[in-house]
Amino acid sequence: YLPIIRTLSAITGHISMNLQSFKGVTMSQTLIAAISILLTIGLLSGCVQGAGGSGDSTGNIATMSDGKYKRPSESEIKSMLTPLQYDVTQHEGTERPYRNDYWEQKDEGIYVDIVSGEPLFSSTHKYDSKTGWPSFYRAIDNRYIVEKKDYKMLLPRTEIRSAIGDSHLGHVFNDGPRPTGLRYCMNSASLRFIPRAALENEGYGEYAALFN
Image (cartoon, rainbow, N blue to C red; front, side):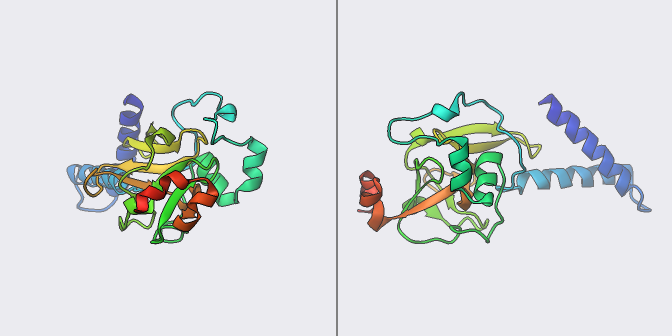
């Protein structure tokens, strides 16, 4: 946490110096304002994420597979994804809220990793989080979900990646609805939607029971 504390101190000092240029503003007022700004940025960041690598190593991801799903080669990934999808899944980018494919999707079906096809989320657990990104209160199979600590927004967050595809999916927060209290805030660009009627043909027939 020492790097985070040093960063906070430096940024707080910089903001304080700028705020003091206004007449009648005391040092204590500038410090309070600076800290409030930093906390607001961290707490309200939602799914916003800058580019950069993940904090932990996933080993030799090029060969990761469970026999059913696998991560394609780098060249295959580049050819199969749009620039936005590639930026989000491979470079931890973030799509714009309210301007993505699935934030208000209500059709029945499941959402899989756009790179590997791993089953991740179901429409039965999807809800409107008022953030502009598709949100779920649980994953359908935790074997395909990996959590990693993310310090890119100053305050620590929990990044969600796919276990085999190693795709950046989004983040999970503790402000979701019952029964889990979780909010999986995902990027549409990381997902592919499989309609309920197509589950069997697409090889996801075992998840049809979610809609019975």
